[in-house]
Length: 122
Image 1: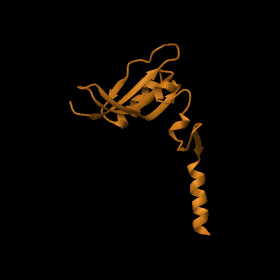
Image 2: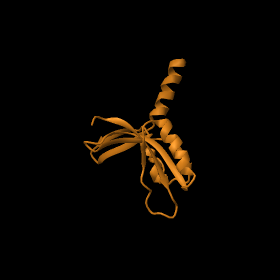
Image 3: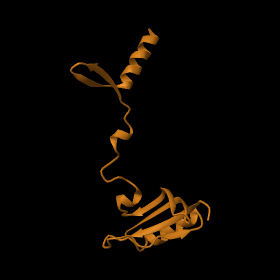
Image 4: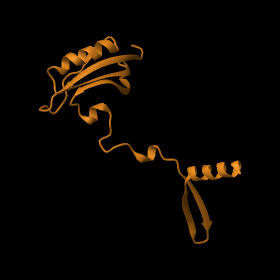
């Protein structure tokens, strides 16, 4: 089967260790409506879509469409420790090579850009 977009609703109960079986739907609207119905009897429901090639067992990133009630953070794809700050950082290093060893100095690229912008404006 070729790669296609799948739509799911998955209920969660706080007293269970693992989530219940996920339900697959034909389209996003059906999945969202199904999620609302499941939310009446579950502690929480996660409605999401995901690209997948089931023949090759290849799955893409989960995209959350709706969330009802209490859903574990891990199920929503949120890192419980928070976003890794290194993913957003841009850092440059200046290396000074001497006989005594290399000295690494971190340079803030945004400060350099501000200095260049100030020089051009002057």
